[in-house]
Length: 151
Image (tube, rainbow, N blue to C red; front, side, top):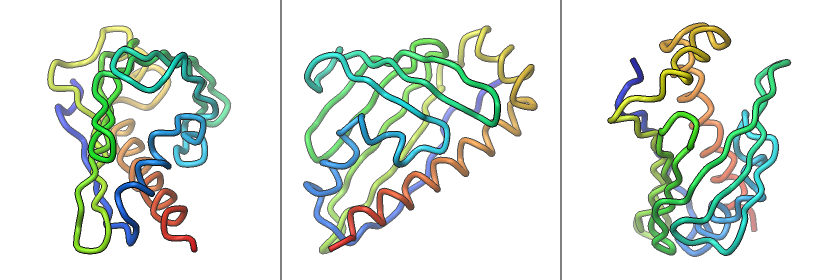
């Protein structure tokens, strides 16, 4: 069973507007994510916008589709992975002169049977997969931080 909430955060020495510009540009997702290799957005960024994505882990490739479920400029961006029903979000909070970014994977309502079967067959089981996800989330936020803090 999927853990209901996976969450990591980082403090970035950059204003929310600069951080928002990075995370809301889905074309840049492969720059941050260790799994995402390509993300194509269909239409302007708003609730209901869909994306097509290609992910990779070692020699395993797979497509996913996502639907944006919440957009609050400079505050929150969330999208549902349609195959497994998880919701990924980035929340931005002003933090002194910078921004705290909280990345979350929500699976409070569980994930699809297909997703559970795939995780067990190809990713070494749920515990291993979720450790990889958290490591990937931390890596993603470190890359976003580095990009946002560049002069």
